[in-house]
Figure 1 (cartoon, rainbow, N blue to C red):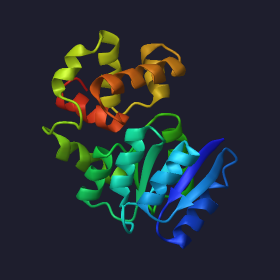
Figure 2 (cartoon, rainbow, N blue to C red):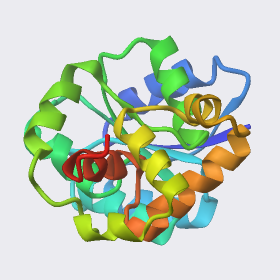
Figure 3 (cartoon, rainbow, N blue to C red):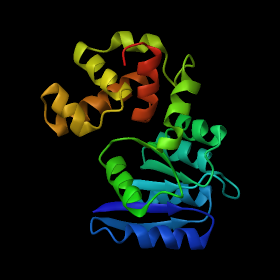
Figure 4 (cartoon, one colour):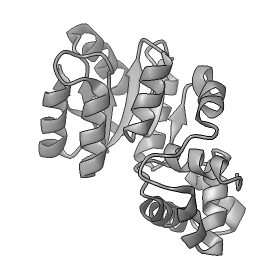
Length: 212
């Protein structure tokens, strides 16, 4: 089962997300939070696989909560928001979110996104992908300098290049003729070496380094 924590300050929105996600037999909602501070505490206590995080919440907002949760390694965070403003998009990904979707997403797409994030992949709403890549061009990835790429092995550079092209773990495994479990291990090692908290951050670094 994929354990999910819902973080949104609107009870009706949480109820709607619960209804959509619980239609999937492999997803379980383990908790809810109405603000960022509670989301951080719940993530620490419940250790869900994925936190569905809203951005605009009272008190501690979703970006700060995402940063705390990912830095502590409590869960992967999938941001789900009404707004695709650049500040929200870039802030969430800089904070370590594994993905960014709009609340207008179809139920099947949301379920697939939760599964992909739980499996270690990243996900971005099609509406924001091109804007993201353009805006991040030439800016340093968080907690990592481009020089860090020089310390990667040849295989790790291949993995980073694949992340830069947006490949999933399954696609990466097929391209490198390895198992999906091995691909996931390689991705984890690359993220650790580069100081990145999500594969989206690593993808940005790959493009900055010119190896994607």
